[in-house]
Amino acid sequence: MIFLIKKEKLFILCCCFILGGITFFTKERIVTTIPTTSSNKTLEGITIVVDPGHGGIDKGSNYEDILEKDINLKIGLELKTLLTKQGARVIMTRQSDTALDHQNKTYSNRHKRDLQARVDIINQNQPDLFISLHVNYFGRKFRIRGPIVFYQDHKTKNKVLADKLQTRLNSIEYEGVEMLNNSICKGDYYILNNTKYPGVLVEMGFINKEIDRWLLTRQQFQKLLTQQIYRGILDYL
Image (cartoon, rainbow, N blue to C red; front, side, top):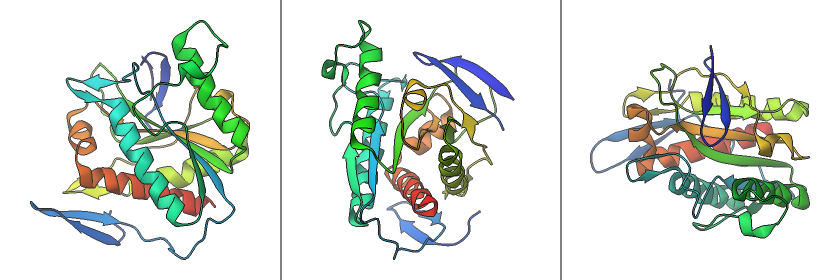
C-alpha cells in the first residue's frame, strides 16, 4: 500500500527476532538485542556524510514538546561516534540545533535553501555514502510503523545500501516490541534527487504513532537504532 502525505513536503510511504547479539541493561528492565556484525572491519579511507534533518527554526515533525530535529541530532551524533571509532572520516551537515538556510542564497524559500545547503555539503565532500536522518508523521489512521529507508534508483548502490539498512532496522526488538517487516521505498526527496553520491534517507519512526513515539524517546532504543544503522553501513561496505 502506498500513502501520499505532507510533512512540509510530500512523502511517499511504502507499506510494504532477535538474531542474538548484545544485551543492554537499564534500571527498569532488560533491553534486547542487536544482531552481531564483525567489529574488525575498518572504515579507514571511507568518507561518510551524516545529515540530521531540520534544526534551528525548522523543528520538523513534532508531538507536543517532542521535536524531530532533536531526535535526528541525537542519533546523528551517536552515529558519528560509532563510525569515527571504526576509522571513517565523518562529515556532519550540522552538529548543533541550527538550520542551514544561511549557507546559500540559491532560493528565496528558506526551506529549499536549507535543503540545498545539505546537498552542497554532500556533493562537495564526495563521500562513499551519506545518511539523512528524519522522523515521520502521518495524521490519519494507518497500520505501518517503525523505520523505513527511502532511496532513489539513479544509482544502483542506493538500493543496495537501503536494503542493508532496512534489514538491520527490521531486526530490532526493544522490551518486547518488535519492528514490522518494512520494505524499502523509492522517495521523491530533494536530497535524494540532487546528490551525486550513494545515499539514503532514513525515516526512523512515526512521531504521532504512540508505539514509535515511546520508542524514539527512550535513550536505549536510540542506541539500538543508531547501532543498527551503523551495522547496516558495515554490511554495505
